[in-house]
Image (cartoon, rainbow, N blue to C red; front, side, top):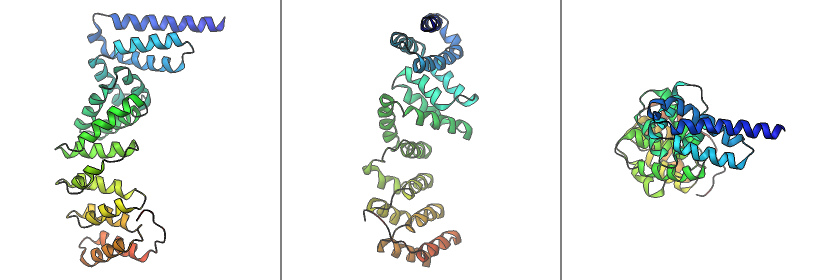
Length: 262
């Protein structure tokens, strides 16, 4: 009896969603549809009836019109919805939703909005069919002429646990914008010590920007390789930035006995 009542309630909610999807005025009700998509995503996760879940997914695909996606992204910034909730709802739009999310992230000027879109993009990566499109799009973004787009791509690929493409690393290390080189240095600094990271850090520690040199110097202090020690000594002799110089000297004073892959 309880099971029958639950199934009836699910069917009733599904009828309401379907009526909204069939509305001729859906464009004028985009905010309502966005909230409905959030509810639909929850229902798909919690329903015990396979046919209801399939029908919810079908209605969700119809509801996820471009304007509804835009309103859903507005909600992700202006309300307390969890990023994974928003990503689960955006999933109904399919892989093409990736472009909409990244466009919002790359155009965002306010930090709160940028953080919200970033978190939604990371949550999208939890869905395999969206992750592939997301990683592919981000790899292409690494060649963008806008430094903010490249910086976002580096940060997102790292957050997703996706490797930066080997054929782009040296281009990024020699990018004209310091923000790109700084983002790369921050990522490489978190790598486990190894030959690939060492080569990049040896280049970045000679960067024109003191911030980039500082990050690279901190990371080089974790390497026991002779090349790393020589680079730190050279940098300590020539360094004009007092904080970077202090980090060089601290790295040289610290005995590093373990490293891998060098």
